[in-house]
Structure formats: C-alpha cells, structure tokens
Image (cartoon, rainbow, N blue to C red; front, side, top):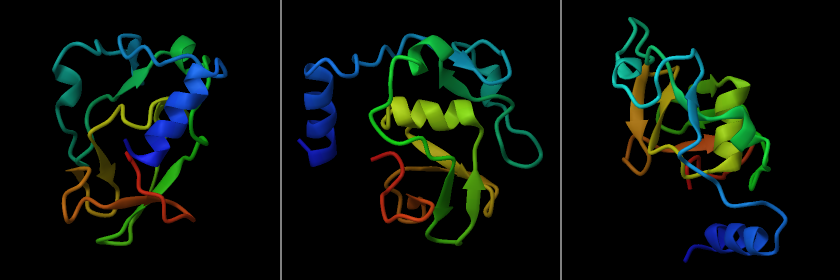
Length: 128
C-alpha cells in the first residue's frame, strides 16, 4: 500500500477523520450526480457540471490540505478550481479519476503520459 494511503488509513482508524462515504454526492450546479447529462461538454471543454462530495460529507474532515490550483506538467497551464471541488479532493484524494486542464482545454485521466498534474507550488501529484 502506498505511504499516503497508509497514513490516511491510520489517521481514519485513530478516529481523527471518519472514512469517506462516496455515496454522498452532489454537483456544483445542482444537476443529478447520478445522471449523465452533467458530463456533456461546453464549448470551452469543461463539463456542464461536476460531481462533488456533499457539503455534509466534506464537513466530516480532510485527509489532505485544501488546495485550489494545480499545474499541468505537459503544457505548464495553471488550473484553479472552485472550493467544493478542492474540498472533495482534500476529503478523498482518489474520488476523481482525472481532471481538466485550462491550458489545454481538455480532460485527462491521471497516469497518462500527458495527464500529469501537480498541486501548485509542490511536486505532489494530483489524484495520488
């Protein structure tokens, strides 16, 4: 098990932060998180809406710092996200399988050669 997952697991087991309940979902704009229409792309490449953990679930505690910006290592583009998205990453770093790059105007899956992202000001990979 990777070290960060081990630390997260031990922290939760110690009772400091309860385990995440991924069934507690919402979207930023109020669309149905279980539907597919939120995934439709707008002209700028972003989805119509994004799934997040509910406010109540995010309020249960974070296993990572809340960070709002990340850099795409391939293009150097900086992307800044809304607070609910950033808090979802902080509550459950593995909630998402990929992310959007404002520089490229596209979504990338984590782990692709051109999908490498780091939190702004760090060398820590997003989604890992």
